[in-house]
Image 1 (cartoon, rainbow, N blue to C red):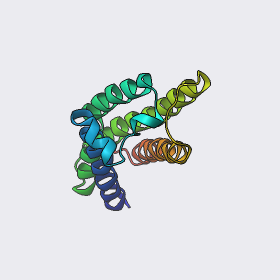
Image 2 (cartoon, helix red, strand yellow):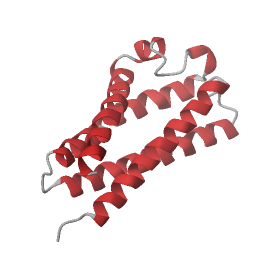
Image 3 (cartoon, rainbow, N blue to C red):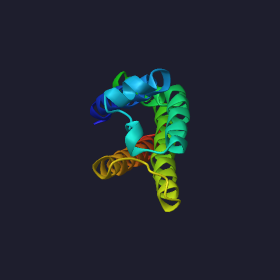
Amino acid sequence: MQATLGIICIVLGMVGWGGQLVSAVAFRRAQRWKLQEKNEHTDPLFRTAELHAARWDALVLWTLIAAGVLMVVDHAMWPLAALVAGGIHLDAGGREAAKHIAFRKQSVRVGAPVNIKLAYGTFLVLALIGLVLIFYALINTRA
C-alpha cells in the first residue's frame, strides 16, 4: 500500500508541481496550454492572484514528489515528509476554494463556468490527497 500511495504521490505531484511551475515562469504559455484561464474569462485581479499563487506553489508543491519517493524507497523520513506534503496540499485545496468563493462573491470573474467546476474538483483532490497522506502517515508512524 505504501509503495502504491508513493507512486500516486509522485505522479500527481509531478503533474501539479509541473503545471504550477509553468504557470509561475510562463503564465501566457500556461494559458495557451489551458493550465490557466484565458484573459477574456477573468479579471486582472484574479490573474494577478493566480500568478503569485503559482509562484508560491512552484516553491512548495514539490514536497508531494519527495514524500512519494521516500514512501517508495521506505525511507525512515517518509512519515514526516508525508505530513508536510499532506499539510501543504490540504491547505492549498482549502485556500484556493476559499479564494475562488470570495472572488465570486465580489463579482470578480474567475473563469468560464465549465472551468470553475474543474477548478473546484481540483481543489477537492488537493485536499483529499492531503488528508490521505496525513492520516496514512499518522497511523503508520514508527515508534
